[in-house]
Image (cartoon, rainbow, N blue to C red; front, side, top):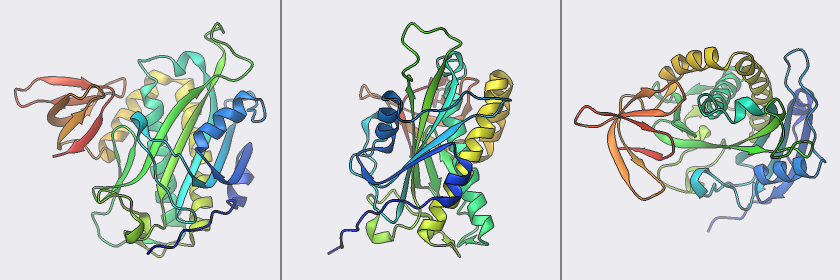
Length: 299
């Protein structure tokens, strides 16, 4: 029988030093939902971005009781083992709602997460157990290690109180990036056979609390830097991100099956990303299909 773990308020000194605002609680239903609630009632505000530098707020919990993934999926986590964080950033409404570029916001969240994890591993002198245990992104919102799910990402748009549905396109909105990561989860705690945890693949890691804080600190800085560049030049950054994704896109070059919300599926080779961050799936007859919303699994 597994012992239930008790949640405790996250201690995040490094993250607090770089973020504009940090909210930390021992337990909540969802950090994304809590962030949206606090943005909506005005208790969590983000200052205007000045001189190209973006404000980033963090909402953290040790336990989520109703963590959410993409397409209504649940995110199961354990306190003291899994990092559950949301990062809120103000960006121009025109970019957040532009379907030709806004798909890259999710890809940026993934790249920021990989940078943060790899940076933390390097800082503490840790190393993978096997040479093929690279951290990759499974389009559109999963962090993978050794072909298994280590984490998930969920991006949601929130309208701050000062804006409304009839606001100008130049107004800012808030994007909340939810990031759930299995950092110190033992094999017996894994929720599915397709999931994994960082400590199962990397030796020399610090304590869970140190890992969580070090990764979150880097994520704040990563979101601030990458999103500022994207806002300044969305089209140019989209092309750069497309090239960057080639090295870390787990699905690329694999035979995969896309599962759509209407129950249909599409099977083919994932050959890359389009200019709008959608997935290109090439079926056996040589036809290229654009996949924008689907769960993608390898065959």
